[in-house]
Length: 153
Image: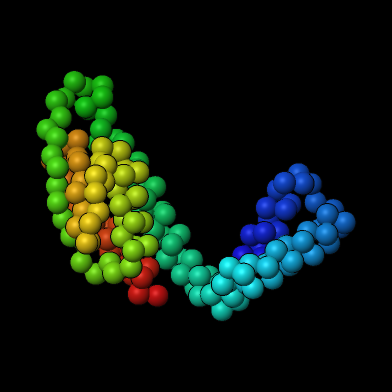
């Protein structure tokens, strides 16, 4: 978190010299201490987050790949005049136990073109798909598998 505070400091200043860096280290350290004391941050928590970072980056890579794949799959509907066959699908993503993981999956589904997560209640997702082909494999998608591994850290 300290590194993030320092990076924001440098970005907001627009340049980096030794005075800005020194003052940024002091300000970032003060903000980090404040967050640790009043917002329940800790060095241990930050290190635990860093351990899960490679899995999170892998998950974000999968998200970008799925967005591209879905965008190309929608081209015939947009430019080719192909008629969509909409579908509302219900599924459960067993193995994703945390609220963070469930919401992350719902957001990944919504960010993928052609699908929107309508509701998430008690681990059950209601997803509107532009076509039936987009609903195939929702319950055991790459997103679900990678979020399970991310939670197992």
